[in-house]
Image 1 (tube, rainbow, N blue to C red):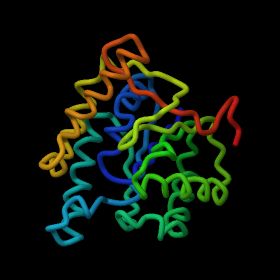
Image 2: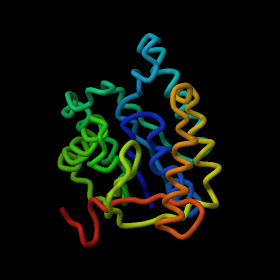
Image 3: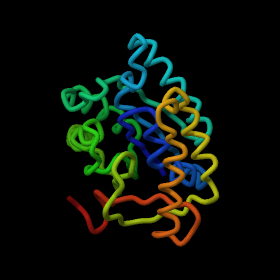
Length: 212
């Protein structure tokens, strides 16, 4: 099965669904990640090209940990991704035509970050252009926890790999310890939603019972 993870920034793939990715890979699925931006504002003190190179290299390191097969970097503008819907959608449409994913992951539409909101608009437009027909589209958590979710994925066996992948994005850990924060959220989800140690939760945005 082909799976595509859409990440507005490098590290969203690991934070939001790194555990699910590990489980897909263990099950023999092919996982590709599409980074809509290369997160240059996460390294404001660097020239944009240097910031891109740094964050893309970190994504490549995380890829090895998670088992992602292919990375795509669209290099659209960080924070103002909503102003680049047309070029981002065209580029994503081409990737969807190539990958033909059965499952797509991206930040849920209620996430407060403007780039995460824009990712949903971009995907909707890209699906129209490409005529790709994924069976399921799942929304994951990054900045804003889901208030409602449709599935709980037990990631206890792969939590350390997920945290290692987050830590591979080392340039982003100086101000916020995303590994610590994510471990806490996944522990909460595990205890409350999954009756297990660690879990990820997802909202079904498209699929059986939700065809919008």
